[in-house]
Image (cartoon, rainbow, N blue to C red; front, side):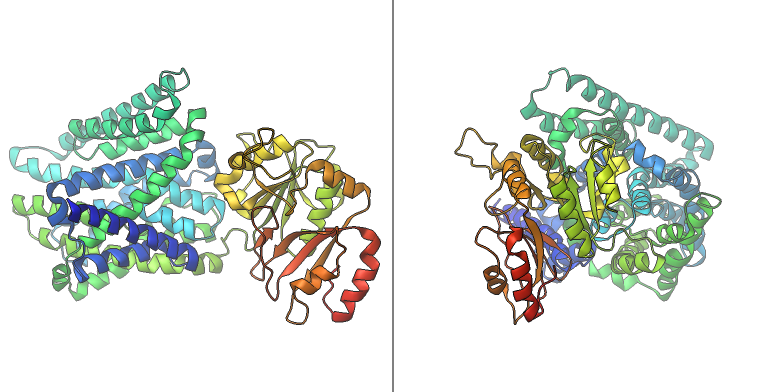
Length: 611
């Protein structure tokens, strides 16, 4: 028992540790998790999943993958699908069968597999999967449309890879009994339809029960998890390997029923998914056996080359032919197709079944699948950023500031950010208030920032920081609370006094953004200072003119507002955090204008004043 608990802890440390290192360094998380599992498994034998978990290993992995697919389905909004210009539909309807056929030819003519094994293995390889694509997209800066295409393809197509393999296996199993391909396909498609209906029915049940108060708030997340697992198991009872299709349908259906409850449990389900992806990756990587590498032959290297540079590109380019997707985006999608270690587990399962049926080559499926996983993870994980830049399909190269609320003060702040070379946008629901923003040459967003359509109309990935500056402190807090999950709790700021949890008259810290300025000035404070003629001032920090020197040139009443790091990161001074400016950083302060001329003269002599 203690040994198993230690293994669970080690899996968590390795998986989350790899994700953290990826966040700090920018390296692909999937490559780091793969390396962590291989080191802990076959290299050091610290984790031996088969010995520790035994027969529970396969159902554990299956349920985890089902939960990952369901959570992925919850992130799929049909409004986002419309932005893909039909690319996802083409990749499903044309790409899957075409990739299956081309992959089978590569398996037979290049890898040397017999036709039955080649067709089955090609079916497994037609999809990518969220366990590898989601961490890859999280670490890369890709434009919205190709990102959506890759995400939808990974989640929606994933169940069909298992179905392709099952169709092949069931035909091989029944062919001696007189079964025909048509009868096998018809039976499995019927089972797939039933599984899809099970998933949709469960989604409708959730959508009926949650809004009507039949499930209390504290039970909604557990009920949802149990419903997903039950749907997965029930569908697999109808037909093995159709459970993934059922939970995917359930996730997509629930996501598009606009349940208010989903917003409350969103952080929980996303955190669970990060843990599951990390655990599954480490666990299955640790299950790899170096003995399988002894079966590796030179022709397998040629097969990997064909898979990377012929099969996948041909599949995508033919599927997206005559579509509205630009060529640079098509080429990126054609290149990115990492396979996850789940493919190794599925290949191992079918390898045993093929051996029992007497087909040759089944024993080398694990070797080939392991090679495909390692090759695609390394090739795509380390190249995605370079390829995206080369094809010019990256998102915003430098992320800026999103200001909510058009006021004279916020427009002045936007001008300062704009003068520093960073993108800035002011959002407001009033067209009249935005007229001054447009006249100042600042990007504007007209609409209610809290509306559901904002996610569709406004690309939040362009911004690293949000500042709510309306004249309503409660509304500012609501905006920050709403966007804290997407942008980051430490990156949403607001005008309004700092929240004191001991004061029953103020909003608690957890329900608001970080207060701008160390003194936590409220809206009235800013209005008074603005009426008194206070202005912004920029100062670059250097060895000759450090932060203390810059501070000494300001009047005592002046406040430090923000610091712009050399790498483009924005950090506001707040009651909760006071960033320490380093050499090369630029500090923006806010102070009385009556000292501005004298201060600029003093700073100009040192060559440090920027404004």
